[in-house]
Length: 131
Image 1 (cartoon, rainbow, N blue to C red):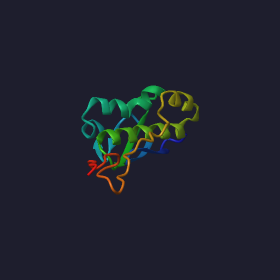
Image 2 (cartoon, rainbow, N blue to C red):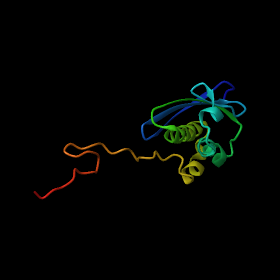
Image 3 (cartoon, one colour):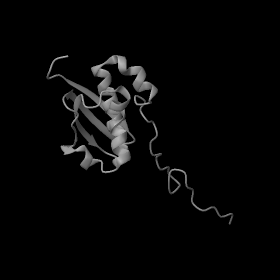
């Protein structure tokens, strides 16, 4: 592994897509050009983003640059987490069992269901009247 090598990973959740670049560094994380503590103000979102590093014991070894778009803040945090886990696999394939056991490599398939014709929403029906 050379000094200036970069590792890429793409993470997705709901409609959010995160493009992650890992490079050797001191553990700085920037999301869309902003410090990640500013971009994700809630502690739960920050923990989700850092979970792959904690699980693989690589905290503080890599600088992370993320471009994330679509969805809401929680969805974006999940997408970033997925992308970081995938990028860590590029760095070291032996981390797969650890990351897989934590469920960090699984793409969360839950999506918003589409609205159907003849009804007001995905599952809701118009009020029924017999006459």
